[in-house]
Image (cartoon, rainbow, N blue to C red):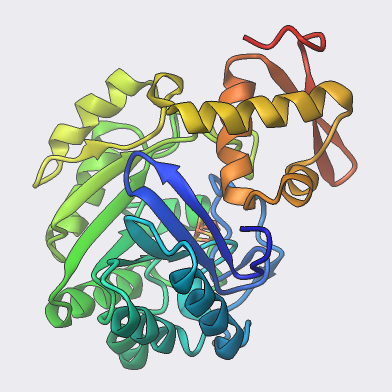
Length: 315
Ligand code: SF4
C-alpha cells in the first residue's frame, strides 16, 4: 500500500472488518482540536473548505487499487483530519459508488453539516459516523476545543438537519474521558442530544490510543458498559482493549516493537518507516504503552517511544 499517497490499509478493525482508508487533508487539518485526538494536537485549525488534495489523484489511486487488489469490507473517508473540509469529497464518494459495491463510510465531527452542500455530499455515503462527546457548551469547548464562537447548539442542529435528509445509516461515536465527561449526568445530557437526531447505532470509545493531551484517561471497560445503557438505542462499547487484538494486528505490533528495540522513535517516524498510516501506528503504540512494553518520552515538541524490553524478549 506504500505506493499510494492518499489511501491506507486496508486496516483490520473490529468495527469495520478490513477498511481501506482515504486521507483527504494534510496531517491534523481539522475544525476541532480534541483533547483525546489520537493524531496529536491540531496544527491547522480551520473551517476553510478547499481541495486540500487533488480529487484527480485520489481517484487515480482508487481506480488502481480497485483494479489490482481491491478487496475490503468498507472504504472509509477519515485519515489525518476532518474529511468534510475537503470541498470535493462528494465526488470521491460518487466515484467509489459508481465503480465498486464496497460500502462507503464517512467519519466526521459534524462541524460542517450546518452547510447544505456538505450535507448533500455526505448523504452519498452508505454510513456516516458522527462524533459528539459533550452535552453542554462548556464541556464542548473543553473537550473538542473548537474555534471561538462555534456553538454546540449549531453543531447539533446540523446533525438534526442531516438526519432529516440522509437515507443511509447514521452512527454516533461518543468518546468518554474519565473525570471529564464520564458522570451519569454528563452522559445523560449527551444521550438527550443524541435522541434529537436519532442515530441508528451509538458507540462508546475511550482513550485506548495515545491522546493529544496527557490528562486524558481511559474509562475502564466495565464502567463504559454501564454508561452504554443510558442511550437509546443502547450503545455498544467499541474501544479496542488489549484482549480484542487480531493476529494481523499482533504482527504489526511486533514490527513496531522490533523497531523501538533498536532506537526511540515518534509515531510519525514509525509511520514513515513502516508505510503504516499514523492512525494504525497510534493504535499499536496505545496498546504497547498501556501494557508497559514501551514508554513515552516527551522531548521538546515531540514524543519519542522507547522499548522497555530487551531485544528478542517480545512476548
Ligand atoms: S478527533 Fe477528529 S475531530 Fe477531533 S481533532 Fe482529531 S481529527 Fe479532529
